[in-house]
Length: 353
Length: 177
Image (cartoon, rainbow over all chains, first blue to last red; front, side):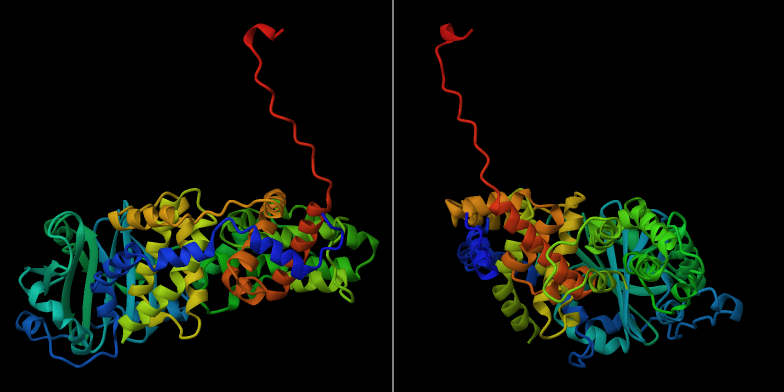
């Protein structure tokens, strides 16, 4: 093997060593199997069609017959008390106030995901024992349901059921096999909100049994049910403290900036912020401190492979590895692959701060 | 129409996502499952996918789907089995020979992080900035990690090849001591 490996050459060699034949993949993508899969995915009609928020304003006549009997009252979202207000991040409260505030009664079902793009539109996912139930809401109800009139005729032949005191319609999503686990959907309106839940269940009876247990809860019950990945203000302070528990911190290090933000962050992003703040602080001491301070910084960073949050984050992305490599460099492992003009300090700062 | 957009994204990106999954899964069936899941999520969330960023969005979904898949959330279906069969029929796995085999072996010897970065950058075709967005780390970090991964690969390739022990010749049973 030559000693003069230039990058373009190396890249060419790497391309030749790709364990996957890219042209064969293109042939697979053009195959009947790929076309059949695409068509099957497109038949998964409930979710994408219902998601079109700027669709045609077609009155959902078939559903309206039942939905017109829906209690006309708009959901009155309880305003949180000032004391409670301070316990949650503003985006979380906003989400809870604008949502239908429905949870499933069976404690086996937990909220695993939520999303809110606009004030009166959002979605939540519940999960239990491998099953999921998606709930989506939007306003106004007519424009939400309008685009799905195409399947309303079939859904309306499904059974009417009561969901939290409101008349709903439930049925199998059309375009699927008649037997076996299928997607079922239930639609109803609450005031200006159109609500749809859907999930893959063995049969309609099983689906309806779960949907019937949806019940309205208070803003704070809903907030408490949010997945752990959504860190509320109070939760964030405690979470940051827990993340820092096994991390040595330099003198004068303050976590206040980490706990002040009102953004909803998941654990990975928060973990990256926490470990970056501490590591950057140690790096400052390592770069600019006296001999004893440099030793302390090296020793502190040498423990980073044991930091629980980095170990937790490692399978999810490259952040942990970046910290560990920087810690190695701060403990005498020479940095390899430095480009001309690049200094170890600048790369470490780039890594950590 | 949304369905037109979906069809376009499907045909353009299915090879990329299948490749991404196939390079990281032990079996075609797993790669087919992951790809099917990714495009199902695309269909369901098509409205949310930013125009012009679809490719990276799909890689992000593929990454999460793969992580979930490894945790055992497998969804087999007749259609993904057909996709798996198509992968077999079209011989998707390349068997590196000659220099490619040496490079392949050297890549296999690299630390996991180096191997993943080179895979993302060369075989999956992502830029350092895209990798950084995918992994939620600074682009500068990716660049320097990539540089070091390339350096380590070079060194791996510059090492003299290890002598390979010859296969022991079959001997008649009576000649064994």
